[in-house]
Length: 319
Length: 319
Image (cartoon, rainbow over the protein chains, first blue to last red):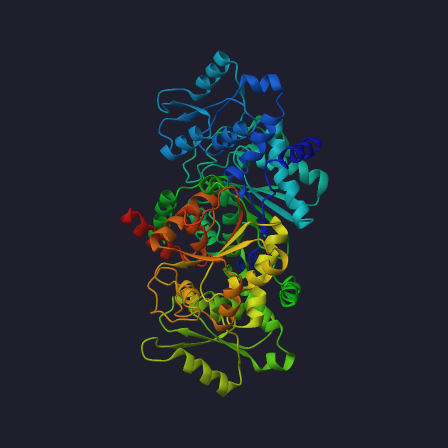
């Protein structure tokens, strides 16, 4: 918890607290009092900036001079590149050659060196490790790192300051960093809060791991939620989450799409598929929340207009 | 100004202050420090709730028992219906029969009585007047009313509290209520602030009226910005705006569309065409704002996903 407070102090200089919004329509649908924590409005478009910046800012000056390296095709890439520029740190971002050209260009425009690789023939971990060793770079992992978790925990710290005590807190669950941070914070500040993670039906690696009592590995999940396609929970995040996580529920892709459309029209917010997991679980009635004070984290909003349209067309076609 | 403070006190019980967001991308594009006042995140999806609720709440109990009437096909309809429900006041909303079915249904679902008319054969003013007289209803006009202007002024009051002094404040300009409220507030609290209204190129009724020195009437403007299709400025709003408004600039429909797309991808906000007027003026370079502290009001976000897609397709086709 001290690490989360330290991260909050670091972040206060570079990121405003994100808004918490309410929606009469969502309250009616859920029969609860719901607060939406808008990490899609966070700097870089997702909560990932919190962890990336915290990890980077806690490096010593000598370490920062060496430079950092991160592997990501998405939000973590933009977050690390932005944090690195903010702290004058050289950054190498390893991205798939077939990542959206706009994303490759954005990361390069932030001043990071982009190294691409072929997803079908090259091993990204081996490549990242070799680059780190060859150039003496410090890796900033996307979730399995104490500083990244502490940074992610500031979302929940802020939320509780903004809303007061909550009965339930619902959070998208991928590698588990956002949830691990939330677990640390609720355990310290609001132990009665029920903590719920949301996975996709095809990618319920943490739910299965919790049942098995150990981290299990699943096949690469097929889902539109491109931020939660990992095969196994993080080691550190799972150790924390198995202590604090009260429940995991799952949603289907069509429910994620419906939630994105609903958020667009009812709350005027652009939410990416992974960011909509929590809202999707609420709208699909996957949780009993009547009369509760409820928090839900919308974790990101990075989606190109073109892809958004294509997804919405597939929703309309499926109806 | 006392009326604006009174309105702010009334509204504090029913509407949270809307967030003010910043965008590094917008700052780079404009070379200014820009604060976006998000009235698209206001209750009912637009700033109209502020004026409608203020006017309704300032009626006496006996007047409220009589009921209210409003004419609008859009944001003012939803705002009055919501305010009326909030204050247990019967409400009649006069709407065109060919308004989007979803909007007719929303207003009815709020408990208002919806009266439709044929836009091509019936006179909406005569109809509204007759209904008001027959049923002893009190009219809540969309902008040309002191309480509506005072309510709208709370947007600027809040914004200045959130940002401190501003060099320039940019506001969409239709009937002129939001701008008149802003003029009252900046004159009292921040007289050095340059106040700029944004009209469509086809609907520059206030710009022309200011040049003529009197309210002139223009043909019904053809524009995608359906919130600013009036033919003449309000009487009261024009009297205020001619004193406080420093400049009017205009934007074209394709610039509005580009601004909506830009807001979607860069700020994760859904903005309706009228709401995007200010951002469109900034992105189109219609204003010299380098190195300034700048506020811009995004006045609403009520747009169905289907219409948003159709508009974005027309933008792509026009590129």
